[in-house]
Image (cartoon, rainbow, N blue to C red; front, side, top):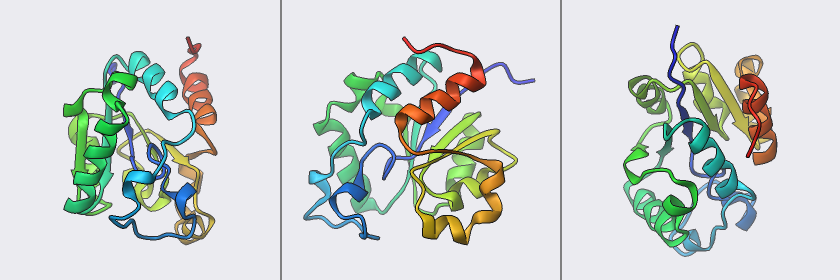
Length: 172
């Protein structure tokens, strides 16, 4: 049995609230990226989770090279690392959604939070604790076969409660 626990977190629509600027936007463009706000409660939640997971919290995002640069700037501009305690070297990028599973396996992640059920579907069987964050109903219908294998969280408070309940911990 594995003693170490580690958490992976998607960035778009989980940390950076892309949907609040344009809920219908399927693509992110250069003109609006810097204006995206953080998801409500994300800094406090990730600071607490980083403490609980003893620094084993990783950000894993599927994006283009351009978006990668924008994300790194957003994290810097929002003082993300200081506010959460997550280390800059714990940020990983992939170009295809299914590649997140390989990063999770390599890092030995036990938990992953993502807004896409498709992504979590690739992790069923390899990452034991999967949380679907603020799911898109259309995307859920397309990949609903994976829904019984994940927990759903509508916000960071609910995601925290699910992890706390699973591990019988109390938030600071």
